[in-house]
Amino acid sequence: MTMEPARLKTVVGSGLLAFPVTHFRADGTFDEGPYRASIASNIENEAVALFAPGGTGEFFSLTLDECRKVVSAAAAEAKGKLPIIAGVGYGTAMAVEFARAAEQEGADGILVLPQYLLNVEQEGLYRHIAAICQAVKIGVIVYNRDNCLFAAETLEKLAENHPNLIGFKDGQGDVEQLVRVRRRLGERLVYVGGMPTAEIFAVPYLAAGFTTYSSAVFNFIPKTAQRFYKAVRSGDTRTTDDLLEKFFIPYIALRNRRRGYAVSIVKAGLRVVGKSAGPVRSPLTDLTDDETAELKRILVGALGDAIH
Image 1 (spheres, one colour):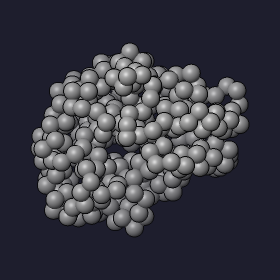
Image 2 (image 1 turned 180 degrees about the vertical axis):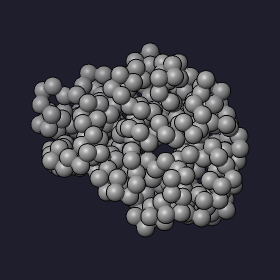
Image 3 (image 1 turned 180 degrees about the horizontal axis):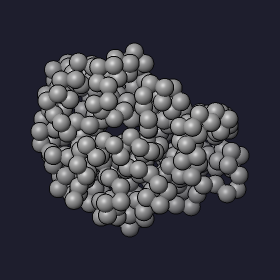
Image 4 (image 1 turned 120 degrees about the horizontal axis):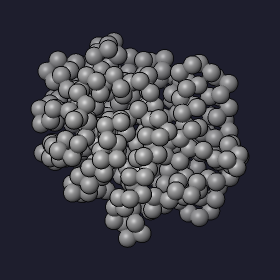
């Protein structure tokens, strides 16, 4: 049984979210065994919901059949212990196809990633999201970023007409837009921080009403990710400031060195802690050996030999 949209909304806002990487073999094929083990680890470390596959899970490099396999594996491993939210994307017809497939494979919700390439008008975005909401019964979260930016009025209209629209994830960081959306929609939606390396933005986003965010570093340092999240929620600025200075800021400097490293650096982190998820798929590129060694130095310098 999948989770009802109203329940999914409550769960998503209740704690730290994670989006597992997708495990590939050396030849680039999906490696289900280690992937399922990573889902089990995410559950053990108390993520409240998983985006699988999301952007960090390389959704845009997966075929429809592969997405089916990834969602099915995640849902089978989760066994209802926490919700699985599958990424969908591309143009409307393809997004609907991916959404229906995710629902069939046991996903509890979907995250609508930005459409490919095109900048569009608000009416087009409305029709796009409306078609996806109408295609499934599970909960829908929109991802506000890049070329998929929602006016508050568009979201309000969508929320009025589609009860299974439950969430707004932001990866743009436009404070004026966030204020407009929150004032217009209030508690109708759950608000999720979705900036790359969301921890950097977690404190100001909390002040804006975003009770949660999705953590990429949860993949390889889940206990530290949870410690940071709990410090944010409790106002423990000593802990957040310390981890920002010692780990997150140097980590971001390395992440920003090349395009696409927001995903690649997560897989490098898994290699550093002995839990390789294989290579990234092209057009992404992996960190070099020297950069991976640099990441290890950052991790050990910040967290000691017992990296977790």
